[in-house]
Image (cartoon, rainbow, N blue to C red; front, side, top):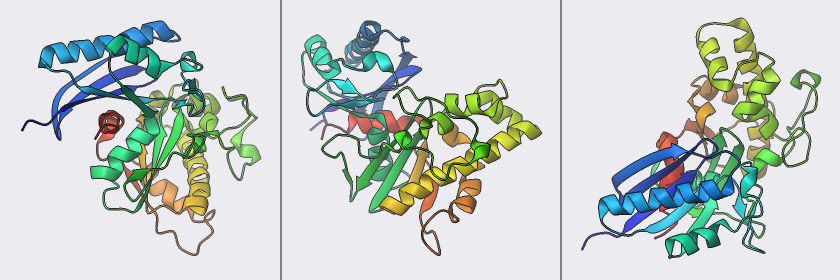
Length: 296
């Protein structure tokens, strides 16, 4: 008997990606740019990807969507999205009306964490904290193979805690889109790092300058690694996960996997830190794979 088709969609800040899975076999993958600040155009882009995929494969599938925010358990509309055009929208309902089937939504970091805990870098661990370091900063928690959501649907949202052990060298306060000052996201997201570095470069250009031996860029990376160590140390103190998996564009900075563990021990309430910090095994595919797996 042929396995059913599962479609996963990763709605990112810069791109929308769709993946078709049949069993564990990847059948098709497509991407398109995310319309900026335009909910109606974003909705149409998602539906177009689904329709094109199904037309090419000749079969209809289930649809799971990972989003940079959360569907409120109280009213069903999107909240806490760094793609602010989604806030207050009934994304699941609108997609269900357009695509004529049930839709499952989850936070993109939850999808990422579920994917990596299932058969990725966190496979076999009883507790996994999945981290997104990209346009925003998110997190997902998987305990014994199950996503932890919580009654407010915000489990793992460490990006909107304040940066711990803050010091003058971290720079002046910056307002987060959520309305608070100095959220972790304003330090550790790509745009946050770029803005606070003072180099006039985006995160990709800073990383390139680091690799070219630029002293100012190397100093910016050192500051970033220490801030990431502090942020993750607060997670370890609270959750004590076996594995922390990094995803998102900034997770590709190889130096972080040595710099951060070397620094977090001074902040973790333990004589030794046994938590492992690892890159995502499925890389950029983790979020979209986890979205597909929202359906059994």
